[in-house]
Amino acid sequence: AQKVTQAQTEISVVEKEDVTLDCVYETRDTTYYLFWYKQPPSGELVFLIRRNSFDEQNEISGRYSWNFQKSTSSFNFTITASQVVDSAVYFCALSGIIQGAQKLVFGQGTRLTINP
Amino acid sequence: NAGVTQTPKFQVLKTGQSMTLQCAQDMNHNSMYWYRQDPGMGLRLIYYSASEGTTDKGEVPNGYNVSRLNKREFSLRLESAAPSQTSVYFCASRADVWGNQPQHFGDGTRLSIL
Image 1 (cartoon, rainbow over the protein chains, first blue to last red):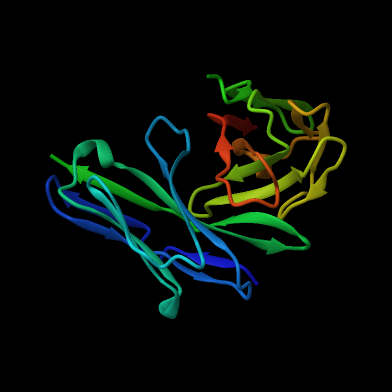
Image 2: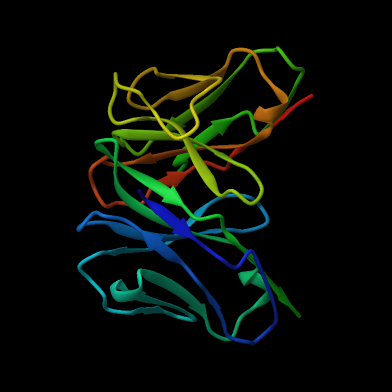
């Protein structure tokens, strides 16, 4: 079964603090893809990053970084020096084969609030 | 650069009424998806269409029907709306259902069933 767990329902930090959003996944596929999406208060879903199961190299994009560890089935997301504009709901998702087709399975989301 | 366009953005229905949510994409994508988003549950797949002319059930298809009208358009129909279908509905598209490309989402339709 494919499953994504984001155990942190809500996180609240003060601006400029670093914050890490956890994502743990379950899959039996050997080839799969992991994604992070951002949903700001305006409601749209914004794609942030994709990582395939063969590439465990960490990635950094500005203040954002992602730590993929197959050994612990985790794909965590860190925001460095957080800003108020980072306030959003963040979703981790797994793309794998379900019932013969590749589908996205989403975690429950983590609501991140950055306070000034 | 419209991407994925959903209409309407908001709708209020009475129990038992029917409604069709429209979705169109201009990226020449092959696969399209309908999700619902409920508090604390993330996004759940209702139906998807791997290519023009095909549709398949997702995780929560009961109470819904879909039509892949052409490559651009994928509609979701509620035949007899129920309060449990109050949710935010998202349409998404991807270039290829088998690929690793990210899905691109519309802005959502907020639907309330009274």
